[in-house]
Length: 154
Image 1 (tube, one colour):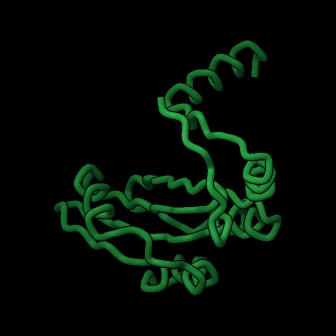
Image 2 (image 1 turned 90 degrees about the horizontal axis):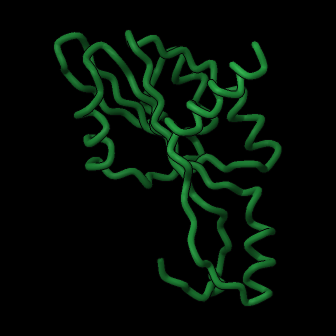
């Protein structure tokens, strides 16, 4: 662990995260779009980039950006696609495609946590030092969720 003095950049950004969501059977419908739109409208997040990987039953891979998706799914993501920057490299996307099972799709989403910008500004103004940051792995969070559900008897 190292300690770094936070320096104020010309444009302050919140933390940037990515998620990869798999859709077995290539059953992707775009139903997550309304929630993503709500999160952007509430200034909780800002969508930076979206990419899609589709693998057919034979293992053939199609990689596409949201703006090229087409169909009902493409229509659902068109608002995000118009604003998306291309942060993902082809190497990033291909690394996900390699581990994607046949007959499944993945949506790869990069977003800025805009909710944290004012907190970051306060830290910068107070000359705070970032000591560490990280993310609890999703499998640990799922395990805790399952324990909480079991305890609640749901």
